[in-house]
Image 1 (cartoon, protein in one colour):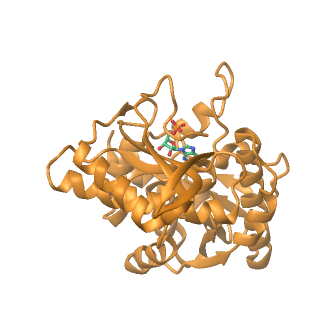
Image 2: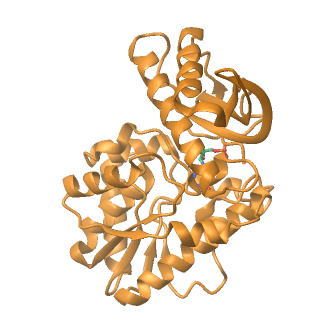
Length: 314
Ligand code: XMP
C-alpha cells in the first residue's frame, strides 16, 4: 500500500465531503486516532473529537487519551457516560444483544453531542474486519462490531468511515507515518471491558476485570521485555461469572474466574495463542490473587487459536 497516496486521498475526500462541523468518535485507539488526525488535517478546528467514557475503559485510559490528543495538538471533548452505559446494560447477558445495546448507546451519546455542536457528520474508525465479521452480503455474522451493529437506520448524521477498507496492519503503518504515538498499542475493542465480562457487565464486575486486565497487561509486556517471548499482538483478562471455592487466609472464599488471554495475529482475522512462559503466568496468578483478594478464586490461561475461537470471548 502507498501510505502517502492513501493519506493524501483520504484528506482530500474528507475536505470535499464535510461541510460545517464533524464529530469523531475518539477512543485513543489506533483506528480512531488515525481518522481524527486525517480529519483534523482536512478541516482543522471544525473537527470535534469526542471521547466517551463508557465506564468500560481500561485503567488510566481517559488520562492516556487526553495526553495523546494534547501531544497531537487536537482539542478533545471528554464525555462522562458511565452511568448511561451501566443502566443500558442492566440485565443484558446475550453477547450480540450486549454489542447492539452498546452500539445504540454510543450513537445516542454522539447524537446528543452532535445536537449541541451543530455537527452534521460523524466520522468513525471502522476498519475492514469490523464490517466483514459483522456480516454483509454472503458472510455470516460472527459478531456485530459496536461501530457497525448498533447503527440505527435513521442515524440523522452523515456517517463517514475513511479507513473502512484497511486492515489493522495497514492502519498501523498509516499511524506510524503520521507519527501518532499509539501506532504500536495493542487493539482494544469498541465495546470495551463489557465484552470481557461474560454475563451481565455490572459496575462491580467491571472493576474486577479492569484490575485483572491491568495486571495481565503489565506482566505480559514485562515478560516480553525480559525476552521470554515476542510481545503478543493482544493480551488481556476476561471475567467469567463462574464461581468456585477457594481459601483466602484461613477462610473459605467463593469468587469469580479470571481467564488470561494472549495471542499473536497480523490482522485479527486469525490468531494463535501465545506460549507465555510459566514464570510469567505464575507472576500473573500470584499478583491477581494477592492484589484482588477473595473476589477471584481461579485463574486460567486460554490456549485456543482463532479459529475456532475468536480473540475476545464475546
Ligand atoms: P475477535 O474477537 O472478533 O476480534 O476475534 C478481532 C479483533 O477485533 C477486536 N474487536 C473489536 N474492535 N469493535 C472494535 O473496534 C468491536 O466491536 C470489536 N470486537 C472485537 C478484538 O479486540 C480483536 O483485536
